[in-house]
Length: 292
Image (cartoon, rainbow, N blue to C red):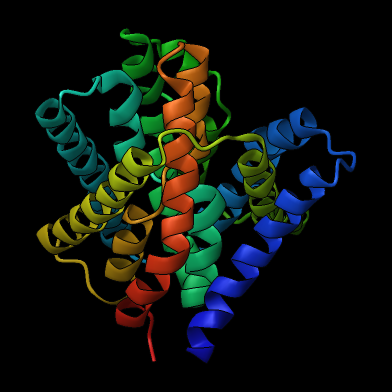
């Protein structure tokens, strides 16, 4: 329990700091922080991590394919569940497909598995982000928009990082130090932003929100397990894929629902309810996944 607390406590304490900060009505420039995290800190974290990741290209490829498979399996399971329950697809399928592998998943994998864990977690998050900025708004809007993907700096950063890995090009110290420094800002800002976002959401339809959230966490973990097994992942890679897939509903799903007026209150309820349930269920999952 002490080891699990060491993993989970920092995540929840920093997120609670953001939650309490907002509730206390202290100044917080949400637009600046969100823009900085999305356009600067996270791309730098991805670049720094991918270029320093000590893993074979075949392992990274298998991990990326497993991540993509887990996202599609979770989304497909959500679609089937919504059809069976006669609920609309556009608000809920993204909530099932896209877990909070950034704000919550990356820090938890860091504390649970160390530098190796955050490296694998960033690979999973990168794949998820590509889907989230293409399929996410496409499902919410009912149409695809490639401009949304091309407008995010994450895609060119990933391409450059993979090119550096493939060619073995040595990077100047000033570049690695700068991207590392800016990337280190991402994790605490992600958690504070998560707390701030949760403080601004409201819970509606508690019973249904809890039921759908529990289903999301279960199908996510199952999708991660199935994908990791299908691609023969072992050890930390396997644990990271399962853990990342089992994360609660990402806040971005609420943003897409609000933008396209797809029952945003219901999606907000799932974000809150799934995060609360994750606080109870993730420690149990970590008992089986974390080393030692």
